[in-house]
Image (cartoon, rainbow, N blue to C red):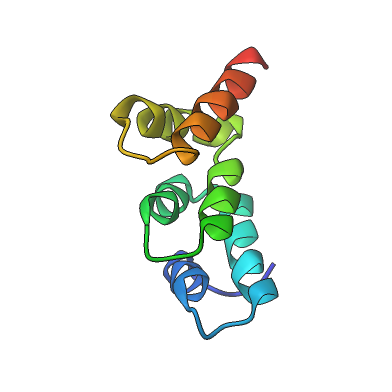
Length: 96
């Protein structure tokens, strides 16, 4: 685990100048730290590539972040296919 703060991880995930692996690592760090709100903010962020938004969405599919994932699904603010992916992930988390 790095010594980055959640804010630094979000900044790195949003940094288009950073390499792909570092951006993905930052999202994994947020998942490891159960930073659900920060992950949800990345999912909602339409300025970043969809692959990072999907990675952040998938990181929310944990028991610790299930209420945040539920809020994303219920808000219905995500465009397709992210909204459908969120619905499926919530079903998976609820089924556990």
